[in-house]
View 1 (cartoon, rainbow, N blue to C red):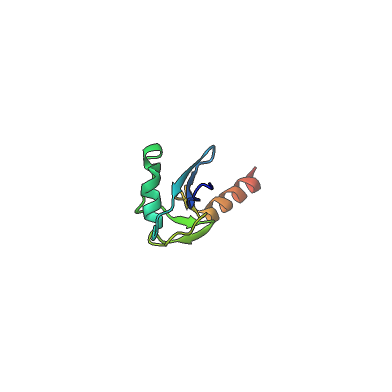
View 2 (view 1 turned 90 degrees about the vertical axis):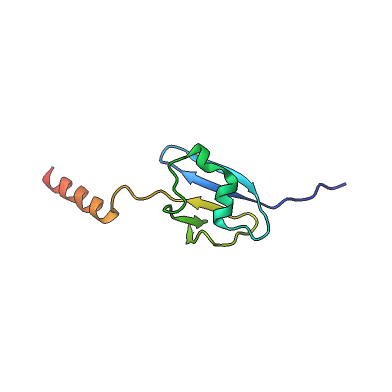
Amino acid sequence: MAEARRDTLSVVYALGHSCTSIIVDLQTGMTVADAIAASCIRTIHPEIDPAASPVGIYGRRVSMESELQPGDRVEIYRMLQADPKQARRARGRRKKSG
């Protein structure tokens, strides 16, 4: 007898040196917020603030209310440490003066 197939998705949080990926069983009508809560990822990474952290599915920004599909990868993004344009300008100034 074949085993019943369960639909799953993953919740991912990446740091510069490591990545946490947790598999979650997909429930009907599950949203990004539901998946993050079901993953319990905040027990591993308490610095995640679901209200402030941008999220996406496979690199495309979405809202916390977005409904999920089987196989989706919910990505929790970190806030930028510095404005990329300002960092690029600062590197350019250092190269010119060095």
